[in-house]
Image (cartoon, rainbow, N blue to C red; front, side, top):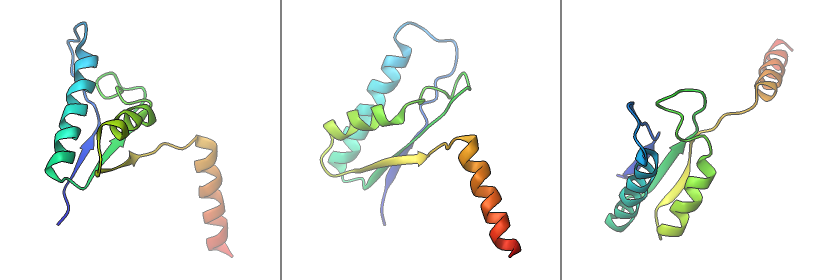
Length: 100
């Protein structure tokens, strides 16, 4: 059995000075502990345009910080957003291939 973590970085209102910094600092501490305890992986999502859930708009930066603080835990994107153009093209091609 493998164990892992999944981070969305939710921060409910009311916001205070330093609350976002504390959110990320606490998450890094948790992931460091998980690495020492032998957890297998951690996932980070990407969120935009939601007030209380959009504290992870650039997960690559956070994952870079995680990579510098851990030794064995695997890190990665939990959910990646693609551009609307890519999604439309993929959807159109998939539908076109099925009709042939």
